Image (cartoon, rainbow, N blue to C red):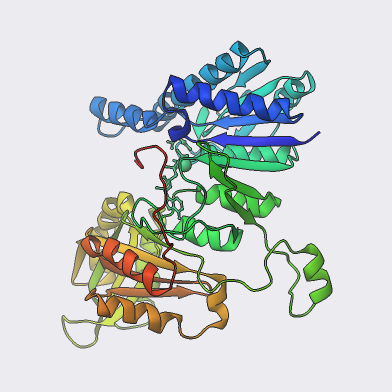
Length: 435
Ligand code: ADP
Ligand code: ASP
Ligand code: MG
C-alpha cells in the first residue's frame, strides 16, 4: 500500500462544486488502495479577501490576530472537503495545523516549521480514514499560539507531511498542467516541463514563479521529497521536481547513474520568471572609502529586509563618491528608507532615491554552467526589442536583469522566444484568478 500526500490549492477548491470534484479524486485515490493525506488551501481568493477585510479595520493588523483570522480560511475548506468525502461513503477526518502536529517557531505571518508530530494523522490512516489537513497553518509551543507559514504556505504543509510520514509521493494539484517554461498566464506559448531539478525550481520560485512556494521547495530538497506538480482539472502527467544526486557524475559515473533520477543531458534553459514585487533604493553620493558599504548594509540588515541585487557605480554627484543601488521587496521599502535616513549623518551620503517601478526577469537553467553564450543571447534579445537593462546579477545557474516595470512582460516574451522555449500551441489555464 502506498501513502500519497496530495495538496489542493485554492483555485482547485474555489466553490462547492470544485470541492465535490476534488473529493471524488481523493476517494478514487483511496479506492485504488492507497493511504491518502490531503493538505488543502483556503477556497479561491478567500485568504486575500480576509486580508482585505483586516485592512479595512486597521492599516496595521496585529500579527497574532491576523494569523487567527487567515487560518479560518483553511478551516472552512478542510471541513467542507471532509464532509463531502464522508457523503460519498468514505471515512475522512479534518485536522487543523496544530492537531496535525505542525509545530513552528513564533514568527507570525512567516513561521518556520521546527517539528512535525503527525500522530493523529497516522492514527486516522491506521483506522482506514482519509486525513484532511489545513494547509498554511501551524502552532508554536512556547506561546501556545496559531501561526501561518507565509503566503502560498500550503505547499510547505504538504511537503512537511510527506517527509514526516515518509510518503511515497507528494502531489501538488493546481490550476495549470505543471511547471511551465514561464507563467502561462503571461506567456501563452509557455511549454510544460516534464522534469526539473529542485535547484532550478528554487531559482524560479525565488524569482517570482509562484506555482510552488520557495520554502516548500527548500524543505523538499532538504528532506529528499520528490514533488509531482499537476492539474486537478484533468489526469495528465504533470512535472516532477527531482533532487539531483550528491554524486558528481563526472567523477563517479557508475554511482551517479544508479542514484540519479536526473536526465543525463540537462537542457540549457529550464525557464524564465518575472517579479514585480521589488523596488530599488539608491544611496546617492557615498564617500568612496573602505567600510561604507559595510555600514550601509548593516543598517539594512537590522531592519530584517531581504535584499537581492546590489550595484555600485561612480557617483553622478561628484568625484570621490559612489552610488550604491540595491533591490528589495516593496513591503520592506519604507522601513529601510527610515533606517537609512536616521543614519545619514553618520554614513555621510548625499541622498536616497526610491524607485518602485522596476521589474525583474530571471533566466534559469543548470545547463548554463557550461555554456558561455547565454548572457550574450539574453542581452541581444532585450536590445533588439528596445528594452533597457538597469541592473544585472548572475549565479551559476541564473541571470537576472532589472528593467522598467512596464517593459518586463515584453522582455519575458522576447527572451522566452529567443531561447527557443515557445511551444507549438497555447497552454491551458484551467481556473483561478492568478491573484
Ligand atoms: P494554487 O491555488 O493551486 O496554489 P497558485 O495560484 O499559487 O495556485 O499557483 C498556480 C499559478 O502559478 C498558475 O496559475 C500560474 O499562473 C502561476 N505560475 C507562475 N509561474 C509559473 C510557471 N513557471 N509554471 C506554471 N505556473 C506558473
Ligand atoms: N491560503 C494561503 C494563501 O493564499 C496558503 C496557500 O494557499 O497556500 O497564501
Ligand atoms: Mg500556491
